[in-house]
Length: 463
Image (cartoon, rainbow, N blue to C red; front, side, top):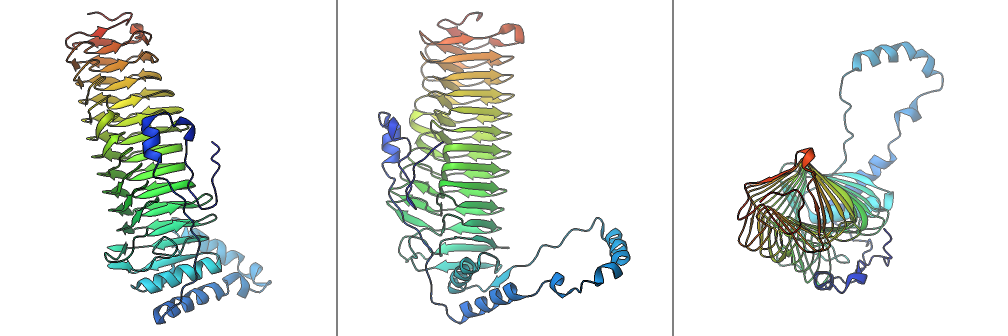
């Protein structure tokens, strides 16, 4: 996907879709943003950090001290030592300690950027409280490979009385790694990325960390905004962030992978939990308790290619058009061993696909509620393979699945059972022009739905 982005400015993705209301309203909040690293005057604590960085950078290596003729003398000893050391874990190198002071952390990042990167060990049981706005963030922009190691109860936050700014920004060539840290209290107005902003060419890896209670007012990406960079989230929590526009927990225009993590209780106008344009991979995770007008849990724009595997998408709410669990127009999406349950939409069902190609395999879609299509509303090309659609309810038609006039729905070995619609199509409702292929020879069944199993042209459906 090609996104013509200005330096340090998030673009207006998908302007060609301006005719769609949800596209126009959501993206209207995007504005320009310039982020650069800034020099910061250092106090005594900062000077101590500077000395530590200098010492770590200037220390000679063991290879420098070894004489050339030492290699032969130590061959046998090294072999014996290697045998003894087999099975032992290699110790991770320690980073530069950063005292529990915001000025010390600012100075350490500034020094690390100047020296080409660093590993910084933040203090345990410490909250670094940021008070100064440095080009839109509380800390200098990351422009080199920098790792921030936290520990038990280590957090970085914005002071409540401070000006509005995000916590961290990653610029081109910046490589940020967070380990065991909490990022909280970031607040931006009229721009993007309340907690963390990743610019084009930047990258961030978030390990065993929490991104919580950050806000993008009149903007997008309450917790994190990835603007053309690369984002990896592992064993982490993104919760209770908010955006007035798109992507309460996360808005990614680029590549994002999420593994063994939980997105919980984020809110936005569109895409309460996650909004994606680009590449996405979500594995062994939970997307729960989100709220939005459209796309309560996950919102996918038209250029998205990816997969969702071994993940639960539950108890999300959409209050306008629908798609309480998943809403959008993915270019190509595969969902494997996914549970989509107890989601509620005022409009279209838990899974609402406006277009694109989607495969749902070995999955369960159950106990969801919507107007047209309690479980699924399909206007694209959807294949259900060995999947159960059960216990869903529609306040109008299509209790299990509502297939629209442009929809192509194909089922293999799939069970559509015990779904309910108020009007018709308790199991499957197929609008005129839509195509449904049950492939009953593969084991597909549509039974025990009320008031009927199928409505419209559904060959092979009985009752």
